[in-house]
Amino acid sequence: MTDNLKYKRILLKLGGEALSGEDGQGIDPQRAVDIANRVVKVHEMGVELAIVIGAGNLWRGVMGEDLGMDRATADHLGMLGTVMNSLVLMDAIERAGIDTRLQTAIEMREVAELYIRRRAIRHLEKNRVVIFGAGTGNPYFSTDTAAALRAMEVGAEVLIKATKVDGVYDSDPKTNHKAKRFDNLTYIELLNRRLKVMDSTAISLCMDNELPILVLNLWSEDDLHKALIGEQVGTLVGNGQKH
Image 1 (cartoon, rainbow, N blue to C red):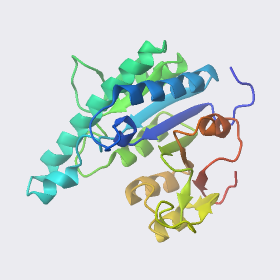
Image 2: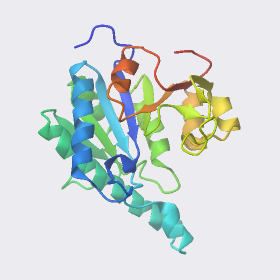
Image 3: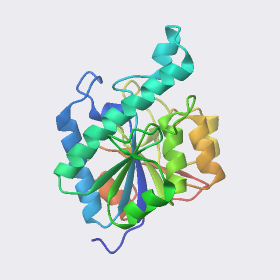
Image 4: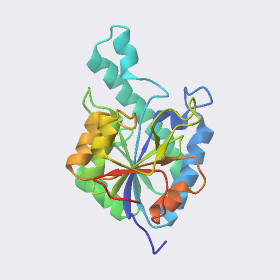
């Protein structure tokens, strides 16, 4: 356990692509093992950890809608995709030796617990990792919004958006070598600049409830550890607070 923790309870938001192969599609079990190894390090620090993972590697609701599918049906497919990813992640984390619970917003008793806020908090208090699947259980809401909602419901101190880049930039750093990275942003700046970090509903929810968002690189060896002990890493989004 680490004594100088800045955050003692966090929610980690992962994109479905975190589990995908090189082409960004499907599930690569080795990527789940890599994520589990990072979870182990966080757990050993004494941090209480909840996770929300998307399903972009398997399905996006907008794909079905573009083909004429009913939006609610397309979104429910995405929710099921998040449960598939969550099961893979749960298995990898448990094989790494950490008790893990999967709770879903849609009842499926054979594979997961139904989401119950007080039970989720109790799991965290018992040092279990909790994975929230199936989004909010409602169509038209993204897993970003689900992450913001669950973070506030369980009393997380920060929502960590883990990506493939080391923060928020004013343009795509892959195509613009002069792209500027922000150390700090306010929620309003994030919304006004239309920076594609999270959808506007999730950002507004965090803003209304003063939940900070930290954007960092999941695959950097030490960034998550540094963030949890208060070192300046990635981009911090809030009401003007600095790293």
